[in-house]
Image (cartoon, rainbow, N blue to C red; front, side):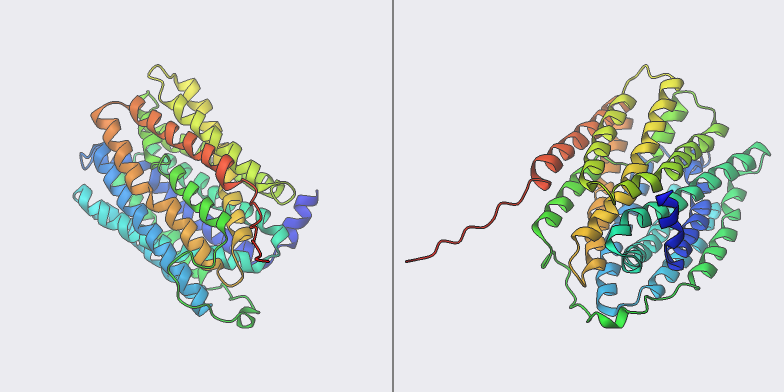
Length: 400
């Protein structure tokens, strides 16, 4: 009951950003589970091509998340980046229908992820500035839940369109409608009324001024991200294990539904208890999930169980990790902090997806998933023993 009262008391900006993410993800996730099918069946591209496309696309997104975050701290203007970012992605995605090769898909995904890079850190900073510190968990949890609600709607639409025999290319074209709605909603956003009270920060592309724990956390995030390759490989694995093509979007919608339902309450709990426990436990669960996915005799039943736990993993981390960044960020450097977090959690997707795709195609799915399981296990150990280790006071020797 307390959680619902807090939700209703959140500012309109928080709900509007959530609605924008919901509509945008309805378009994005309508296409996402179809990408490996489109690349494999229409453009004749394999796992290596998927790894290259997703790795480069996500690395681009991550780099521009840092750039936009630093610029936001300097200019104190978030709306323009949010609107432009959603416009670039919303009107670029449908162009996949006209791609004649996987390289063309790469260019379009590049533009799509560029848009994400330009909007993500300003949006996260705007959310942080819109609520007090004791409501950050539930705020980011609500945003991720609404975002994932769109990831439920999108695959269901894709499954319906496939069921009535709509060609894959035509489905990509339909994505322009929610893209236009997203831009219209983003234009309704307003900057925080007290933004002029905070003096503009100097341009800084480094971690200067950030606390030691934040720097350690960013390092651990980067290591964990090395294990977190594109989710397209999960869908490819499901298809190879016997899940029918028309059910792949439904499987992805199921993950998003779990994340939607549990994202807000789990993130809200982190406002009352330590966010550290949520992150450490969720990362450990991820390691077990990917290790389980490596089993060559995995049945569809067990595959569905692992997908359920993967949805819970996403619910327990997506909002909490961002709330933890906001907790650690110094005054006036929120955008930069989110920029570095998004950079390190995304830039490693390039080597992660390339390595995963290479292991998947050159050796076996077992080798690829075991690699991810090992990297995530190391990240958990680093998180617990180094990042969350209490800081020892610095002793100053006085000469007598």
